[in-house]
Amino acid sequence: MNDHDDIMKQKAVFRKMRFPEDRDVLYAIHEAYDKEYELTRNRDEYRVQMEFYALHSAIYHPLVLTVGDQPAGYIRAYDRISMSSCDVVLMLDLVYILPGFRGMGFGRLLMEQFLAFSEKINAVRIDLLADRDNEAAVELYKSMGFKGRNRYQMIRFMRSNTELEAMFERKKDISG
Figure (cartoon, rainbow, N blue to C red):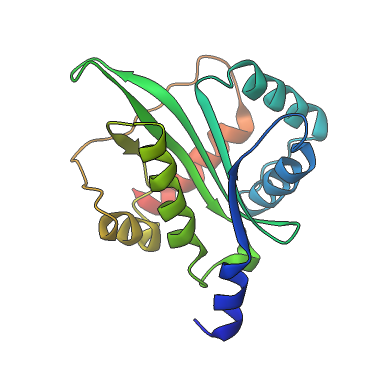
């Protein structure tokens, strides 16, 4: 990390996204993610997704880290019920740092801001899933107090989704 990275981090703003006001920011994030993971969704599919997010805004927490007018990182989290502890917990579904902002500490900054947000809304626990092959993310989460559990994540698609199925197969080939 250098002085330029520090200056950029000082200009970073973390906030909960609003729809439809933040439509273009989310488009930029999705387009970068889709390019990286070889998905081919279009703007109509993004629009449907944003309508779903807006409909469930009471339990859905789309959080963005911006530097100037550019998105640097994104967290998708939602409330879920833990039957074992009888609590509502946050499920951290996605942490994504856009390629141009990686290696500069934005992942840690995004997670620090997310932890502060979680405390502000009185979350009792945060659950997250991380790909085994994403060693940098796993180490970051461990350094921030997250603990691993010896579990599998298993997925069964109830409707055909060839792109997502292909993405999961590519990840399976990487992580076993």
